[in-house]
Length: 124
Image 1 (cartoon, one colour):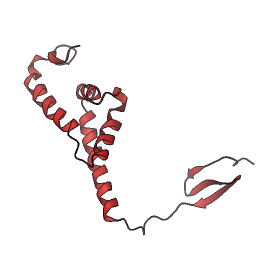
Image 2: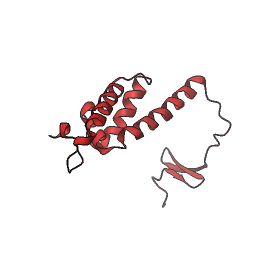
Image 3: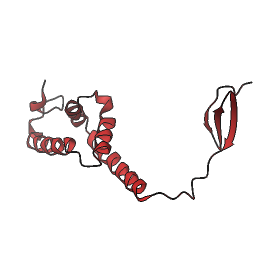
Image 4: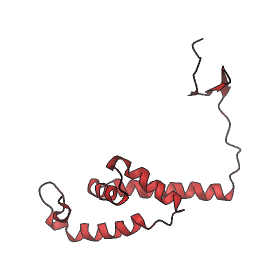
């Protein structure tokens, strides 16, 4: 049988594994669901955190510096920011403190950029 072991969604059909059988179902209609206040708050926080993380990683130099702050590889910065803020319910100071420091240094030293585009204070 060609559907053995298949799971996931394709168009409007969901494939599930129940026991040793593959079952095809319609995609659940989520339009009538009612979210609790806690779910609404969590969704709002997530939207805000994603917006903040996107802004934070928009500048490659800032992204590298944030990677050092969170002690993660550069390709994991977005995830680290989201994790930090979601775990602290939006009250994280790690990135807030760093962002203020970075912005002041970046603006102050913007005129001292070298040919590679990096501020002289950030040379390794």
